Image (cartoon, rainbow, N blue to C red; front, side, top):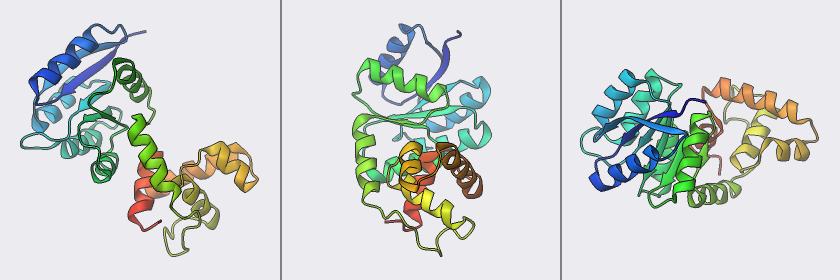
Length: 214
């Protein structure tokens, strides 16, 4: 199995070098490029076509959110994993909205960083423990029955499924609650993603939040 090709984007020299050393010593990863600002990150991502971009958010010039949005818009197959000190809800949701598939706080241990990179490289969505817990707690407070005037493009059942997605339930839990098969829930979820034009679950949750599903 070929190692995942990684582009490291961070303007802090020590942290960037630390990531390079960590990934260089990991058999499943290979650093193919390093950028110190958002503009360089976009240019290098388009040129190198890495599997995963490790993206800091706070950088001079073009910030990590804008860089993520441009990279994903041009090369949606590239997975962006945000690695940052910023843990506020606004930053998390903005990163997901821009297309990031993962969000990790600086200070994460080596196994967590490698596991997150491998998950994003495999097309999964992943959040560091603190971030994931915060998101689930927030969305469990959300209502499970969106009003009919929200997302009029969805059917009543799709709105019900979206409400439960926003509340943090997985497909099996939704199937159990609605009394349907997991396959049916997967079909509804695929239809929801297509109609709302989102790539994954986390983006659907952010969209639901911004529409007032609380």
